[in-house]
Length: 166
Image (cartoon, rainbow, N blue to C red; front, side, top):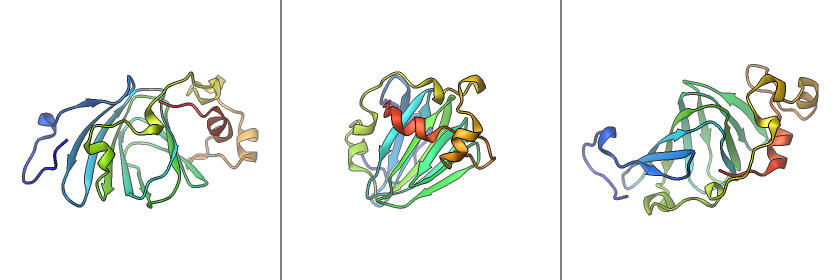
């Protein structure tokens, strides 16, 4: 993916299929990069960290996100600012569109590479399903300190334990 200068249209940027559940379009300058992600239900970016500062903006869908030790369920209009070097991970229980901004640009994305945390896929635990009957009970999640910003229970312990990948 070459670096850009001047004008471009999102529709004309090449779409890269990263996995069967993840695709992206990238525009990069010298100092920052923007990535338009399309995530299908069940996609999971496993725990990772990188030196780049990252800002994630959820356009539609839902993203269950862990930033360091804090977990939140994010929806349309929500923004997450991720400092460089901080471990984070995301699970997408439904089809979701996200825009990420990275500074500086990620060289591994510019070469079309697939990050290690997106290379393989295994079956997800039923605890990660968005169906209410498959969710962890609130008491169990609350004990683990895992509730979303709207107070809903989220099974982070099960999420971390499954170590599934996209």
